[in-house]
Length: 196
Image (cartoon, rainbow, N blue to C red; front, top):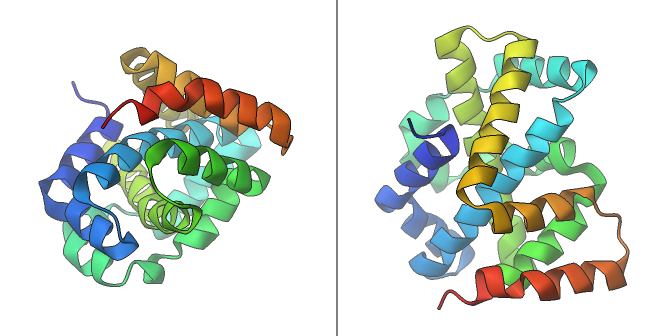
């Protein structure tokens, strides 16, 4: 069975990725490649946040209050005015102080500039939360269930692409030490940059 990360990527590949590319000023291939990194990264960040009971409860409440999954059924409307979904606010909660490091990492390895990466993350964040909301609503998940779902999802994504996920998880764990970051990104460049 596909992970919900794969389901979301597949849904976006059916035309939405092209629209996102137009929004951020990138071609469809580059956008798809960036989405394939950005979505698993956000899932990993959410899994990390939900690994503690307080974080799991806060996420469960946020999903229950604001993310029922309907955004996925109204993709065209959402992409018409994505800023209405408060992606910036979601990223602040999900990534916190890691956002500059994550942005730099994705910028170096996706072919997008930092502004494009920022826009992409703001568009993707509400979609990932919507997918979580859909799962939570359909299965009646409580906070512990949601934490377990994210942990399982993270493991499945890591198994399917261990090299990329190792790099992304390193970004999530780093402070803003530029030299260490550059070492990691230079090592990781071949994982993303080799795809022409």
